[in-house]
Image (cartoon, rainbow, N blue to C red; front, side, top):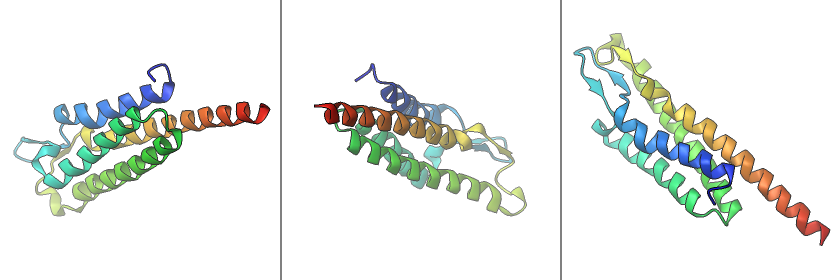
Length: 136
């Protein structure tokens, strides 16, 4: 399990969505107070789902097809999160509540890249297994 590169990618995805989001603010308000994802219940639910999908995908390492599908769902979920972050930061009129964008808004991009790399490695493993089965 741990010797496979997709497990490493999925672990880094777990770290990005489950650990780093607690320490890196999404943005800073005009009063100087940082805004974390925990202050909005919808963001908390979506990031929790993304983290859970990463953990479940790591655990189901023997079922490569299920792992591939879960990673695709996780990519879609992170795209939705990214869209919500960007929409919230750009839709505010006159920057009334957001004065400085944080790097936390772009952590879903890192998670998406890691999930795409994990899916690429899973596909490579699946092709290898299919080629070995064909030779028998």
